[in-house]
Length: 411
Image (cartoon, rainbow, N blue to C red; front, side):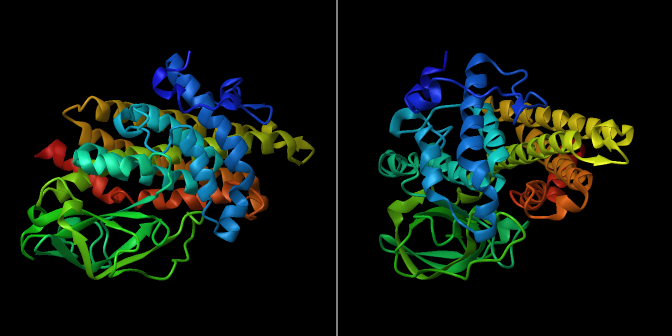
C-alpha cells in the first residue's frame, strides 16, 4: 500500500490505477523502479503517470513559447511535490531525499525544465523548514507546499559564480530592518516567484563566507526589481532573470538562521540541489533512450530497421549501462544525504558530476541515432539535450565537483 505520508496528497483519479513503470508507449525499456521498495514504487508510478499525462504532451510547446506552466506546478503540488522533504507539521510531504530523487527523475521524463524548477522550489522550502523559526515555517510553508507561492534561490552574482563566498550583495542593518543592495544573476523563477531566499553580506566586505547571511525577500517589497528575461538555450519553461536590490528594506525577522550562517545554509541546500539536478538528468536520459528504442524499431535504412544494426545495438547498450550506473550513484548519494553520512558532500559531488555528464552524453547519442530528425524541434531528444546541458554548470559547476572530491581525497 501507499505510505501514509503520501496518502493525503493523492487524488482518487491517480490512485485507482497506475502506469506500468517500465513501458513507454508500448515499447519496453529500462525499469527505473528496480531496487525500490513498495512505497517508493508507488510514488514512482504516480510521478511517472503525472509526467506522461500532464507534462510530456506539452513540453515542446512550453519550450517553443517559453510558457511557465504555473497551473501544472500547482497540480504537481496537489500530489505533495511542492515540499517533498519538508516535515508534515506545516504542510510538507515528509518524504526522504531518495523519494525526492525518484520523483524528480520521473517528472523529468515529462519535462526537464519544469521539473528542475520544482526541485529548486523544494530546496527553498526545505531551507525554511530546516533553518527557519516556528513563525517563519508557520507563515511560509502552507503557502509553499501547495505552490500558491513560488520560491527562488538567490546566490549567484554577475561577478561571483563558483566563488560564492566573495558575493557582494550587502544587507546593512538599520534598526529592525536590513537594507539590501546588489544584484543576483541567473535566478530561476525571477520575476514570477513570490519569495526570494537571498544570500547577502551582513558582515564586513572582507569577512568572506563568515559574513554571509540568508534573508527572505517577498515580491512587491520596495527596492526589489527584476532584469530582462534571459534568452536561454534550454530551460525555457521557467523564466530566468537578474534580481536587483536597490535600498530594498526587509524586516530583520526575515533572517533565516543567524547572521553569518548564510553560506553554510546555502551549501547545505546545494548538497540536496545537486542530487535533485542529477535526478533531472536521469529523467532526460531515460526519456532519450525510450525515444531511441521507439525510433530504432520504426526507422529503416538499407531495407533494415535501425534496431537490426549491431553498431546501434551496442551504442544503445552503452547508453543504458551509463544510465543505470548514474542512477545507482545518485540514489546512493541521496541515501547518504538522508542519513547524514560523513562523506555526503563527496558522494553528492561525485553523483552530480558523473550523472550530469553521462546523461548529457546519452542525450547527445540519442540525437545522433535520430540523425537529421533529432535536430528538429518536433522530436523530444533535442529538448532533453538542451535542457540537460546546463546541469553541468548550475548547483556548482562540474569543475567545482572535481575540486570537492579531490580535496576530500588529498587533504
